[in-house]
Length: 85
Image (cartoon, rainbow, N blue to C red; front, side, top):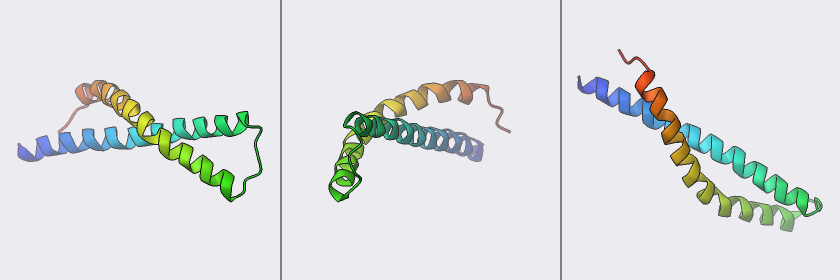
């Protein structure tokens, strides 16, 4: 019985972690591209790439916290409707 609960928890935690990181990367990438596009797409030199990287890092934590909550809510349906052993 112990293995069952561990596998149940592990499957849920893995799903929430991976889905939140993938969603965060996608949303953050779109946000950085929109900011880059709205600034008239300057040449990609070291300064521009550094600024885009700073924007990425700044927004990653903020967006990740929202996507983590979203992933937890989405996973509840999957958690209760999936058959485990």
